[in-house]
Image (cartoon, rainbow, N blue to C red; front, side, top):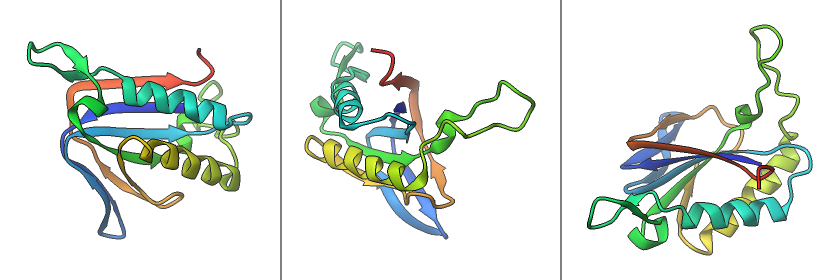
Amino acid sequence: MRVVVQRSGNSEVIVNNNIVGKIDKGLVILVGFTQGDSLNDIEYLVKKIINLRIFLDDKGLLNKSILDIKGRILSISQFTLYADTKKGNRPSFIKALNKDEALNLYNMFNDCLKKYVSVETGIFGADMLVKINNEGPITIIIDSKDR
C-alpha cells in the first residue's frame, strides 16, 4: 500500500462538474493498493498519517499533526501510484490491485481514518478533477512495505 500525503489548504475533487469532496485545512491523501495489502498495512499507514508532524506550531516548526490542528482529510484512490515505467514510455499498471479488492481496501482505509478525523473522498474509479492547494509545499510518500 502506498500513499502520497500533501499538506493542504482548501482542496476539492470534482466528478462530472460536481464537487464530491472538499476540505479546508488538512491533508490530501492519494492512495494506491497492490497484491498482498491487508488491514495490517491500512492500520500502519493510518497511524503514520494521523501522527505525521507536518503542520506548523507557534514557533514555526513542523511539530503538529492533523489531530493537533483538528484538520480534515481528502482521500483519493489512485491506482497509478503503482505504475511501472521501466520498459518503454507507456506505464504498466500490473502491480496495481484489481478493482474489487482495491475498492474494499479503500473503504476500509477511509473507515479507519474516520475513527480519528473527518474524511472526504473522491469517487472510486471515476475520472476525477482533483484541485490540491499544497501548502509548503509538503509532499510525503509512504509505502507500507518500507517499515
